[in-house]
Image (tube, rainbow over all chains, first blue to last red; front, side, top):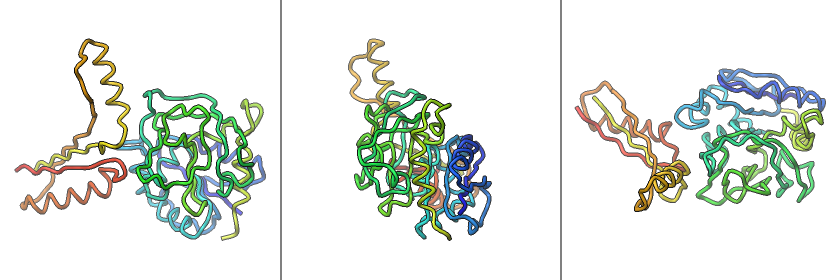
Length: 214
Length: 80
């Protein structure tokens, strides 16, 4: 089973994601954003970075990249679709996740480990974790402050100290079906003890185990 | 035709940039500010003869890309 790791102009976490997935035995390939056919893949990850320079709003232009029609099709068919950091912003702009991401409450770019707690274990990001489990993974964002005027989202992870002002302290948000998830901190950057934490592995394992043949 | 698009964040959505600017202005000795909001203005030059048609086109652009309906409202003004 294969995962497409999408590369937009300005994406910069794609190799970290591929490396982390392969270290868990996953089959992951980089896919350029102009691709129009993902039928060889069983799941998708939109990695972090600054897609299309984050111009206008984060994710606003990336959502119109050609590959996004296929990402939408796979999401509709129930395949796991995970957006990490900038990928989370793209999924919100595309309307595949509720809400939007705005500048951090204190206007600081936050780059440090944060502690999050698992609040929903029926998503593709958290199915292998335990409810209430605490996980330490790095946050690396300026627009990480999630707002949802509809108050209708499923929150899969919450920050213990809510560093960015996110509504409901949400660090990861899911669609109603649990197969499309956006996470603001980076599980792939906590995928080996050499990196200071391997807490992110349980999240990436959840994603890999959610893959079913297309 | 010159088109001006004003994109404003909805009042119920927090504006951290505006809040922080207000704090700085207050620190600078301007204590009477009640609120600061930072919005965005986009200028477009559009080919066309009919201002109403141009306005409709640009409003469609706002719904598609220029504004995020979760966060923002928009206003389009066409001048000759």
